[in-house]
Amino acid sequence: MERKVKVLHIALVLSGVETYIRLVAANIDEAKFELIILRDNEQNQLPITYKSGRVVKTYTLDFERDIRLLKDTKLLGQALKIVKAESPDIIHCHSAKSGITGRTIGAILQIPAFYTPHAFSFLSAGNSLKSFVFKSLERLYSYTNSYVIACSESEGRRAVQDAHYPQERTFVINNSLPRPSQEPVFDNTSNYICTVGRPSYQKNTLYLLQAFREIHKALPALKLYMLGVGHYSPDLEKAKEFIAANNLEHVVRFFEWTSREETLSILSHSLLYISLSRYEGLSYAVLEAMSLGKPCILSDVDGNKDCVADQNSGLLIDIDLPAQESAAAIIDLLRNRDKVTEMGKGAYNEFLRHFIIDKNIQALESLYLQYAK
Image (cartoon, rainbow, N blue to C red; front, side, top):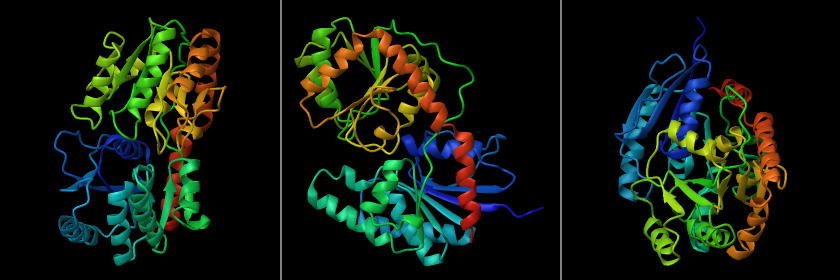
């Protein structure tokens, strides 16, 4: 029997990264590839499995999102021992912190390392000094034996233009989902719109609420459902204070946690999906909404603009404008329910053209086979 290609993923298995790895495991050719996961020690997550149901071999270390130099150095040594013992053909690392770990180990052990940023860290820096430091780190690692697998076209451009990865070592494979089992029902009668994600700097939650305040003035019966808020979110208290100060408690509803089935059910009965985040890799929540035939109102930023064709499958909003101006364009759409339906059909067709996993998993498998040591 032909030897399987061994691919070791290094990641904090959270949010979109978790979805990515679970989808890869469930859709990759199990006869050709053996996956290993080196991850954080979060206790409450279900095992990651192949399509057959077999559990993917997993190691855990005390990885954290924040930088702690002494602890991170110790963890790097522990991770190095695990990778050396497993001797994978490929390392595939995800997001900034694990990206540094994986590419460092790849350089030391001379193992090809693929890196998927899921939105580059310098986009979240918040100030010019941090942005410079994070960008300089990315540029440093562009000189190693590593490759970028961007999860969207705009992330691929960032890799070349900002992180200085050579074009020939930069690949784009869109985040994607399984083909829907049935066509969506294009219903424009709902009285609520949806967003998914923890209130935070990235999700630009206060700006979204400012825009919704204006929408509520024009359309007082419309509600905003905020899913995936979690038990702790950086800007949750600020969001609650804003809602209370503007008397929006009866029209804004938080969902701390819902199962995937519940989330999809709520999304499927919504009028449309909205996210005015500051940056994205390529949001799985947006893809889920598109697969359900929901038009998407999104900020005109990396990741989002790879999903939506403005005025065809949704709206792209300039979040540098005052929230009141952004709200005006959204109100115009919400008042035209026939346009909502047409955009929903456009979103579904865009999803079928670009974001089905069957094609994209083949592209990933081809890269693994091509660069395996």
